[in-house]
Amino acid sequence: MVGPMGSGKSTVAQIIGKKLGWRTCDLDLLITEKAGMTIPEIFAEKGEAYFRRLERELLATVLQGERQVVATGGGAVLDEENRRIMKENGAVVYLRAEIKELCRRLGTGKGRPLLAGGEPEEILARLAREREAFYQEAQVTVDTQGLTPEAVAGQVIAAVLK
Image 1 (cartoon, rainbow, N blue to C red):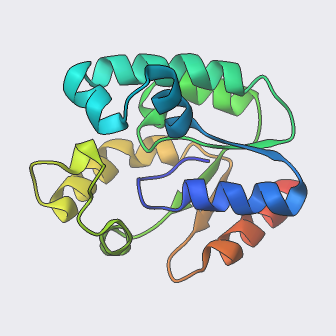
Image 2: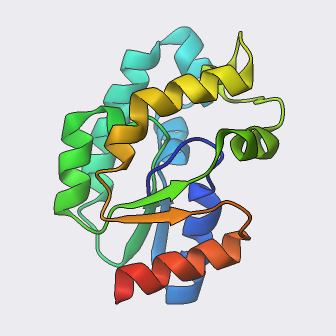
């Protein structure tokens, strides 16, 4: 699954995994485990380039499995290699939400390094402009606006398993 931070990727992945009995993988969680530090610490101490390299390596490894749901970080689509291997190894689902809804879900943005040092709504709008074309490459788009995570999971399952 791809989409901006706050779109529900991690939550929806867990719900789908439970419903289908599939393994779930939160790529950001794997990155923090491998690096031995939080995402804000990785960005502050090692930089975004280091984070993106780890993301690419772990995504390539994770996508070798079957019957799993992978929640990527919001910026995973920026890397052409990531987009290629996602498309080659399963259905790519874009969880879409309006900027105002993302702001509501994210609150202050604590723990989200890309939201540090600015107005969250402006930053999210800029990130959306930079990433939207890449998100649109997904085979399935689910608009999460006004839906519960369970309803989003149901739409994803229906679209992917049809």
